[in-house]
Image (cartoon, rainbow, N blue to C red; front, side, top):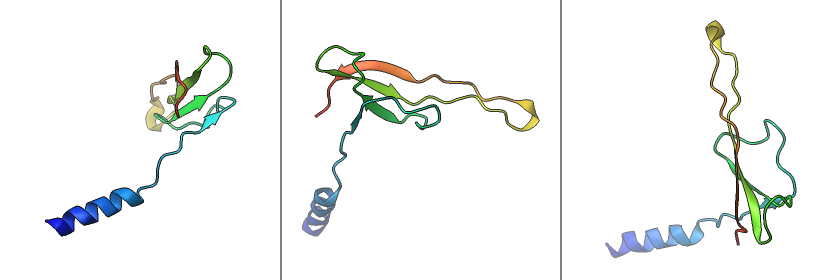
Length: 82
């Protein structure tokens, strides 16, 4: 039991911390995967906040002339992450 606890703690300690990157402009069309989140400091939000952009999905033609629904990117102002 103690050995398992020690191994779990060692794994958690070695887990890389996710760094939050804030960019100056929104990625171009196709530059953001579906569901991927980017923080953009482009001056469109109030002071102390940044724009959170969540990637959408563009419709595309597939076999037999069917299409995939287009899901637009989502935008909202959120407090600046640390």
